[in-house]
Length: 294
Image (cartoon, rainbow, N blue to C red; front, side, top):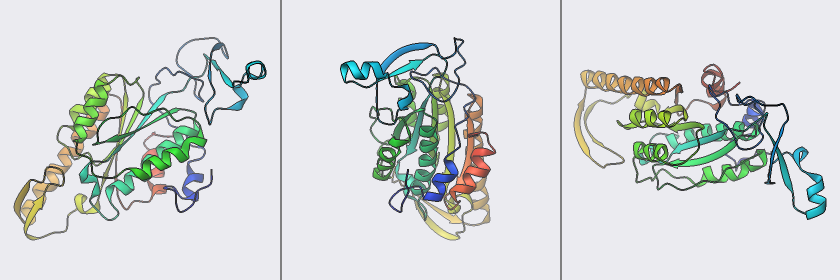
């Protein structure tokens, strides 16, 4: 795949991700042949079924006899190796518009990285926008599908009218098959931890990358301020002194710790990054060291 300035990932970033694979702690049974061994017992390379060919499939698994007879490309699937469902969940709620660069801009980079690694590993990638009305995404497969995913990411805006926790709760209550749910969000919703627990109880392996701006992590403000909630439009007036900033940091640290605990409780992972953090640093120090990828 060629990368250019019109894509979310630069050419160097793509090369960095090329050989990485997602590293879930538990594997969910897949529907087609993938690049990872299933935990289910079976005979190696045992034939399972046919399915229609889609762009990006490995042509080595085409049934050439069927193609010659019926002029229809079909793929032979096997029982020894299976794909997993990977849900890359991008927070598009209004709070993601904060920062320079915005949290949404940084989140798109991370989501693109997850998506590209997933497609390179022959997993079934489902792009999901959080904070907006739910849709029924179709699976993307094969690295040739990355351009579709990139176009989808570019089209997303931080104007969602739904809360982050509602989107996650609705997903947990849906019929999506259990898989790896990778949430890229600021996580600034008091009910998110409970929603993550619901997702875990439905069999999803949850991973949350929390994206915060430097101003949110360590605000440098003083004096009398009026704060406006970007989603509810509620306002509050404060005096930003050392005591108020200390209470803010304590509250933020407590909330982030609650998110991390919720992820760990359901066997998932948690990582926190800043909007200005380069992607290569995130991949090296958060994704690789944290075992998200291998």
